[in-house]
Length: 340
Image (cartoon, rainbow, N blue to C red; front, side, top):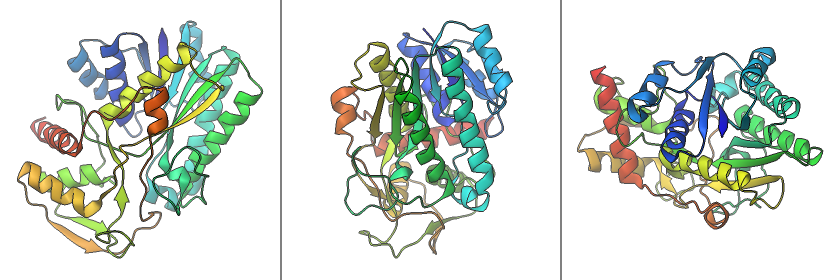
């Protein structure tokens, strides 16, 4: 069964393609503009799996270009939609770019589902839709909070777009996956998170400081109402997140969904603070990190972690990797990058 992966050369998209190939039930087709990724990722996927994935280098905000893929592959049964800008601080600085890119791309994907009768969609959402919450852990019934940044708002709007679309298209089925903080790399160390010169996610910042690409890292905020004053997040290994997308596709293709728009949280259920993650990296790798304590960063919330029992019960999904696996694989990936 052919599945189109938008943003498939990106971090989570590429790991999902690897998982999909190794599972063997679905045949991935990759589309990515490579604006924030690289076409060499397709080579990495082939190196790991031995499979050369069909790849289209284009921006899916170009509807005509996107539709040409469906004209060429008339037997696509589903779409996993990753393609989006995702940097919280950048979204605060450039809100219109985020609304234009993230929402136009989703609109085009939904139009493709309608025109080409694509029955299944998996949407990459985010725990950021919850905002700052009064009660932890959050579950799927936790209401959306006030958006703390344009990125989070685009995910909230995106979910509503899918929900309203599903209401008037009963043969269409969607799973919305709200995941928390993906980290780590493929166990081989041959594929991981590719970051720009100034990464924004914690783990690539840690590994770049550890290997000497960056001089130091800043812990943004040490006065939050948390156990050590730093932000608390729910970190999930990227390969676990990838596995959840395969299980969500199986859930839809096997017609196990109750409604035609289902929502699942993907998290470990354990909150880990920024400082705790730094100390875990130092302990596991034996590398001392150069970091400083700084002010809070715009768009951050104090703490969020997940109740993922719904995904465990209905998707038969749970985390197989822990913090040690996340750290070790991310460090192996960073070391491999240095050798290239």
